Image 1 (cartoon, one colour):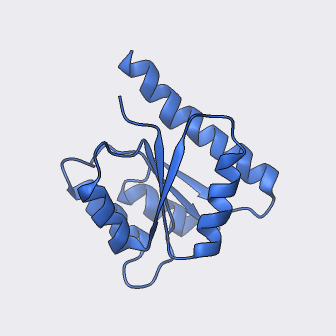
Image 2 (cartoon, rainbow, N blue to C red; image 1 turned 90 degrees about the vertical axis):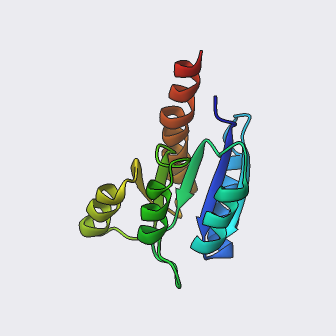
Length: 137
C-alpha cells in the first residue's frame, strides 16, 4: 500500500500554499510535500521511498513544463503507474486532452472558489487514495 503523501509539483509558491491550505481542510490522514518545478519534482520522486500516493502536477511551468514531467514519470518503471492529477489554471480542451494522452489520470482546473477546489480535491483523493487502499486490503 502506498503511503498517503501527496506531492505537489508547481512553479508558483502561492499556488503550492493555496493547494496545501485546501488539502489541510480535508479531514484525512494525509501529508503534503512540494517541489518547486519539474526538475525538483522528478529528483524528489527518484530519491523518495515510499512513493507518494498521488501527484498534483501543474502544466504551465518554465524550464520543464508539466507535459514533460508527466512523460518522464511514465517512462520510469518505478513511477509508471503512479496516479498523476494535472491541476492547472488552463481551461483549454487541448491541454486536457494532451495531459490525458501523456498519461494523466485526472485533470482539475484550479479554482479560487475554495469550496469548489476542496470538493474537487476530495473527489480526487477518494478516487486515487481510497481505491488504492481497498485494493491493497
